[in-house]
Amino acid sequence: MRHSWLEMAAVFLVTLYEYSPLFYISVVSLCFVVTAAMVLGWFGFDVPVILRSHDERESILPKPEKQMVQVTNPFALELGSGPASVTDGISLRLCCLEPCVLSCFWGCEVSALWEALQAHQQGLKLSTPQHFQEALHLRYHHHQSFHIGSEDREELHSQLPVDQGIKDFGSLPRKHYPLVAVLMLAEPDARDKYNIVASVTVIHVPDDKHCLSARVLFQHLLTSQGSMYELKPLFMSADSGSFGPPDSQQNPSLSEHTEAASEAGLRPVSPEREVEAEDWSEGTSRDCVVCQNAAVNRVLLPCRHACVCDSCVSHFQHCPICRAFVIESFALTWEPAVEQGL
Image (cartoon, rainbow, N blue to C red; front, top):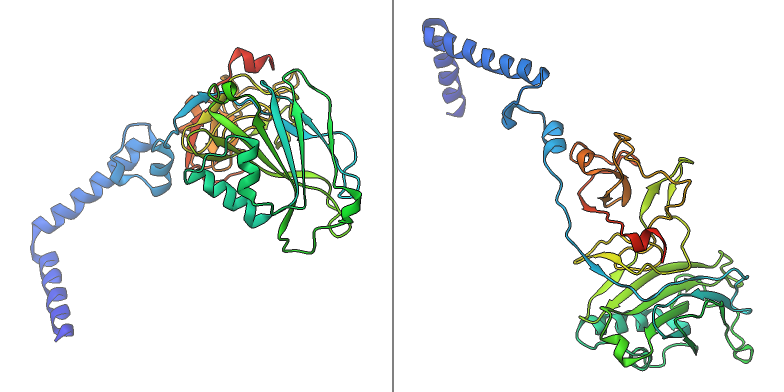
């Protein structure tokens, strides 16, 4: 039955083709419209979207832009210059805009840390060092506290007590982080002044079983509203041609630009969802890598390359640096205080 209907339809089309002038006229008209649209497109005239190729439509459609708000991050923490190991300890360099308390939790349980961070997001505001320590429920090997003034710039040294006899934290997968460094404001009045109330930094410290050099594994900022944002580096172009996160600065920027719901573009070691930004030294290029005429003021997501200007960002479906798909972008704004590294 099905084949008979197909045969009847084929016979009808053949008959229409042979005896109907209207069919000829329709086919010729359709071919003319398609050909004219293609020719007009080659010469720069606007072409209906339905006649454009998929890749062309993707490149012309504007990418969503993330909205950002300005916040101030009072914390900055980076690894010190000395050697680091589980037996010898580690040096940390800090810079805070207000007096702070640094809490070092050696051998903190992975599950304990994440339970504490989830508790903060669920309403248990971890705004003081005591609150954070209680949220871990003593699930760590050693706790050490330091009071840091706003003018202090000396490196601090934290170390496990020798009498504990801990030389490593086990094989992978590990149940303990080597070191969790938590920075919090020391004075109650200062906690009402800043939206960011804590900086949580997880640090790998080399030991007998994992001799990988000391490094920051990840950093999170906790806000007074119960939110948590992960700090991530921006990748920017330099005259040397290398692309990657720049070295951190000692001083935190006074005005950090943090995205309200997820990403943020900031300057050295301090802000929402993005803290290592670029060290705009004299040897660093600020020009858009495409037009070379305008300043770089767009960060592409999710690759986080800051390499194009407002005019060029709408013309790319892929990042000009790494060729990753561009899902969205946000504006990169630099203020005088940030430029001078105040």
